[in-house]
Amino acid sequence: MKRKYMIIVLMAGALELTGCSQGTSNSAKNGTTGSENTIISESDIAILDTEDMFTERDRDTEYDESECTAISLSDEETKCDSDGVKMDGQTVTITEGGTYLLTGSLSNGSVVVDTDKTEKVQLILENVSIINEEGAGICVEQADKVFITLADGSTNKIVSNSFTGNEDTNIDGAIFSREDLTLNGSGTLKITSAAHGIVSKDDLVLTGGVYQIQSEKQGLSGKESVRIADGTFTITSGTDAIHSEDTDEDTKGFVYITGGVLTLAAGGDGISSSYVVQADGGSFDISTSSTETDTSTKGIKAQKYVILKDGTYQLATADDGIHCNGNVYVCGGTYSINSGDDGIHADDQTVVLDGKIDITNCYEGIEGQSVTIQDGTIKIVSSDDGLNAAGGNDQSSMGRPGENTFQEDSDAYIDILGGTIEIDAKGDGIDSNGDFSVSGGVIYVSGPGDDGNGALDYDGTATITGGTVVAAGMSGMAQNFGSDSKQGTMLINLDTDQSGEITLKDTDGTVLVSYTPVRDFNSVVISCEELEEGAAYTLTTGLESEKITMSSLVYSEGQSMQGPGQGGPRMDGQNGQP
Image (cartoon, rainbow, N blue to C red; front, side):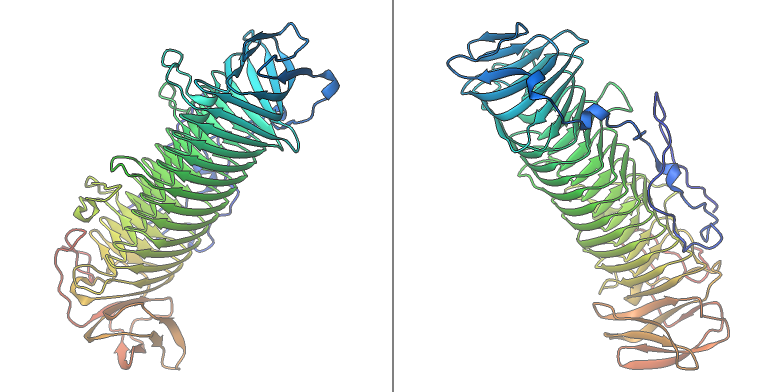
C-alpha cells in the first residue's frame, strides 16, 4: 500500500509556516521508505508563527527610577504623589498609564490596574509583599497591556488566601489580568494561592525572573497563550502546572517555550494546551500525580499538536509522559521518561525526526495511530509493547490511567527510516496493527518471554529494504518480514530456550551483527545489508551455533505457531497473507 504522510496544518490569521531547527535523517534511501512514503521535512510540521512571539518591550527590563511614579505600600497609609493612583484602605488603584515603582507591603490588600483601554502600564516590584485574604494580590481590570518587572536583586511575595467572594467577578489568581500580561526582570517572585498562581484572560508572557509558585489549582494560566522565553520556575500545583485553553478560537490556547528552567510538580498535567504545545528549548523536570482516578496527569499534553524541537526533559508521570489527541513531533532534544502509562502517545501521528529518547519505564513506549522514526537514539523499557501503531481494538490498553481504544484503520503503520532503537518489551517489541516497514537505522529488540506476544508483530505487510534488525523473543507468535522485502532477512526458531549473546558471521568469520537480549529467547529475526540469497552464515545463540544457508532472500527455519495474540490476528511472515 502506498501512502503519503499528510500533515494537516490549521492556518488562520497570521499563522505561517516556519521550520524546526534540526536536520532531517540521512539514513533513508533515496528519500523514501520501503513503502514509498515521502520523508517528513521540518517545514511540514511548523504550526506557530514564532517570529513575533515576544516583543522588544516584553524583554525590556530597563527603567529610569527618576521617571517612575513611586508607590510606597503600607497598611497605615500608602503614599503616592500621582493623581493617577487612588487609595481606599489597603486597595491601591492605578487609573493612568505609565511606569510605577512599588515598594513596601500590604497585609490584607491589593494593587488594581484599571485604566483606559489604550494605556500601557508597567509595575516594577522592588521587595514588595502583598497578602490578600480574599482575592488577588495584583488585579488588572482594564488596560491595553500590563508589564510586571521584578527588580534586580529583589524578592517579592504575593499571597491570596481565599477567593470565596469573587464568584461574580471570576477573579481566581494571586496575580489576575483580564488583559495581556507580561512578567520580566531578574528578581524573585514567590506566590501562594488558594486558586491559580498567575492568570491572564489573554496572553501570558514571561521572559525572565525567578518564580516560586504554590497553587491549589493551576500555576500559570493564559487563555489565549502562555509564552515563556526565559526564567526559572518552580511550580507546585493542585491541577495543571502550566495551562492554556481557549474554547472560542481554534488557533488560540497554545503554550510556546524557548528557554528557561522549569521544575513542575503537578496534581494534574505538567503542561496542558487546547491547541499546541511547542518547545524550542529549555530544561524541564516534570512530575505528575493525583489521588483522583479521573484526573489527567500527563507530563506534556495538547489537543492538536505537540512539537518538541530541543531541550532536556525529565518526566516522571502517573499517565503518559508526552500526549496529544492529534499529532506528536519530536525534532530533537534529550528525554528521560518514567511513565505510568505510555512514554509518548498520539491519537494520530507520532513522528520522531531526531533526539535522544530514554523511556526507562512505561506501559507502551511510543504509540500512535501511526509511528514514524526518521532518526535519533531511542531506548525503551516497556511492560507491554515497545512501539505500537494501534489500528485495531487493543484490549490490553484498557484499565490504565490513559486507556485508549483505537478504532480499526487501514492507515495504521510503523515506518522506520533511520536512528538507533533498543527495545526491551514484555509485550510485543514492535506491534503494528497495519503495515510495518524498515528502510534504515539499527534496531535491537528483546521481546517477551512468553508465547502470547512476539518480538515483531504486524497485521498487514512487513518489508525491509535497508538497515539492521535483530529481534529476539519466543517462537509462539514469531513473524519474519514479508516477501516484498528487498533486503535479506532470516527467522530462526530454536528447539530450546537460549540466553546470552546472538552473533551472525559470514563464511570469513566476520561478525555481521551482535546483540545480547535481556531475557531468554527461542526465536530470532535478523536482517542486515550483508545478507544475500544463497550465501552461508553461522548463527550463534547463547552456547549453540548452527550453519544457515539462505535458500531465499526471506528465509525462515524452525517451527512457529501462528495465531491470534494480544494485538490481533497474525500474518504469515513468508508472504504477508492471512
